[in-house]
Image (cartoon, rainbow, N blue to C red; front, side):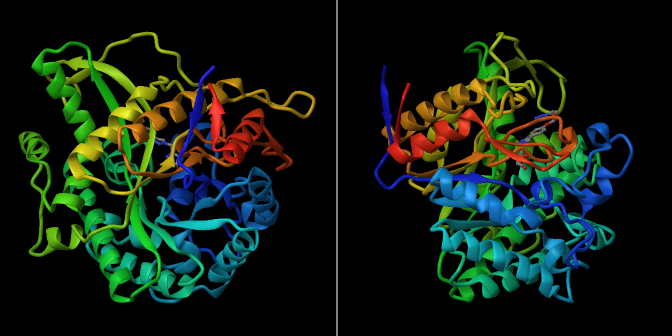
Length: 447
Ligand SMILES: N=NNCCOCCOc1ccc(-c2cn(C[C@@H]3NC[C@@H](O)[C@H]3O)nn2)cc1
């Protein structure tokens, strides 16, 4: 047996997001989001599931914070529903919305848990989408207005802020691949949106500095890893294009002030013409205090001419898979983190999402999610290797505290360390909850 030990100042946490857990979609003055619209569009979400009730965390947040207290976490990463604050996206502020997040944050602080707030986790006010959404540069200004209000309202209570969650999902998954809201399938549109998102990120960081807000700010790109099937340059290049679509496309602008030329050239070949206004890249490359990294899975791949957007295909290597079908590929987490360190230096990193889908159900009041424990062991081992190789890891935040609305998969895919009965809303701590609790208490685990 091996002891996997973590640094003494390691922070441990859990993550959720507003649309996925809150419910109360028509309460407290909340406006409509693009996920309310998308989930109610036939065929978009499995079983026609939606976030009207979800985990009802809007009403049950006190119980949820008490579970976090029992878990012993240092930090809770949640997101704010923009439509609860600005029901029309901009203009009139909804005080009931602010009051809800004050109740949540106050409960966290009273229990010694640090709030980490994600400002945008995909639930754009529909009113803004009706005016072009992220393709309209006015949405950038609306985001800065929203961020400014939140910075001022919660200054002194919230000290860790994330501007955007998974800009690759917001832009490409939602506007090119089209499986997330608003469901467009247009590469030019998606690429331009990715740029507007980065400008919105940079402008809100600028505002954070101007307001002299006490705390730290970053953003949370999602990442993936493709291992080349051979050492042929065409296989290596193909894998670098997919990895670069998630990592360099979003991190080079923030940390280097430019888009990666190998990706710009590739997108240009696909007919994309990015419109960059004077000053955009200077705004985007505002220094951040930390980087959130989300990682779930990786693959083996090789070059295949004219295959998909980036000319690669999967090579099936019969890796174990979680219940959502994603290969279990912990070395990918190590590879992503060391690539980021090599490219961008000693930027402080929180793993802001890492977790697995296992759909185990309760048996006699227990949920024996052994697969999730194994996934955590493997990925925390990879994380400890990255720390040993010098990556500046400040904390690990697992996705997710509880089962919740998994976007296009609805409630069919469970990522929580706490089981949720969606009929009764009863919470049941899974075996992985108790494993994670012990790991947090020890700051080590036996593998
Ligand atoms: N690359 N080419 N793809 C081609 C075809 O893709 C089809 C589907 O793709 C994807 C890619 C990525 C995801 C995904 C989901 N989560 C989990 C959430 N993270 C934020 C939090 O809210 C969690 O719920 N993270 N990532 C889903 C679907």
